[in-house]
Length: 312
Image (cartoon, rainbow, N blue to C red; front, top):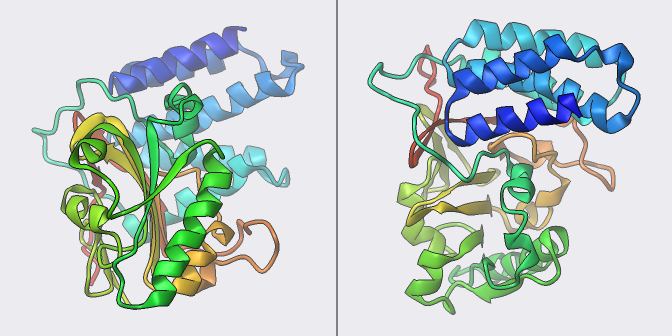
């Protein structure tokens, strides 16, 4: 009970974007709860995730070295367990140390306010639990505007797969069927690219990762280019920050169709290619991504972390 209570207190502070207080709550959990005395798997889960969250809070506070040290400790403790926590930590640590290598944001960036959406991708099930029980609050919107019929077919195919994953009661709509009021007032799951999905095209300029019509994906100062690219990301709705936008996008129809073969969910976004696809039925956590991680969170604005040494 203590572990669960302190975990939720930490989560509440995160919703306030008060990562320093969230950090203290997770640290108090580790101090007050002895892992040897936890008998239930659920209780052990609170404890183990709290330590990972400490690293995440350090990341949001831009104390990158402390974040890395905490995650390295988590990695050692989870070694050999084959848990999602082990693989998420391993992948995140590698990306922040080798791919992103973050630099500090300007001092004027103040992380105060509130945010209903916290992330990661699978966090929407917690942050929007009640919305998933209603059929009218979340819309799955698939693209129909591509000049390539295979891409349009792939968008519709994936929309039905997403519906199976998120909830069979949810509504799927073509990108041409939404009213402006629906776009503004609904949580949106957008499938396709800006070239195929007109709703995504209209919102893409306000999302933290830019998907170009010139087969590029831009993450802060890192540019990925080529047809063999895709991105999954969750972010606040650009027109209503109380809502979320979840994007499933890939330039190749075959990559889009197989997007659920990509190991994802534990981060806010992932950039991937065909090398990320699993050869098994379930996603393979050993398959590499091009980049994955978390956004820097401030009120109404999520941003990718910039690299200390800009990538070319």
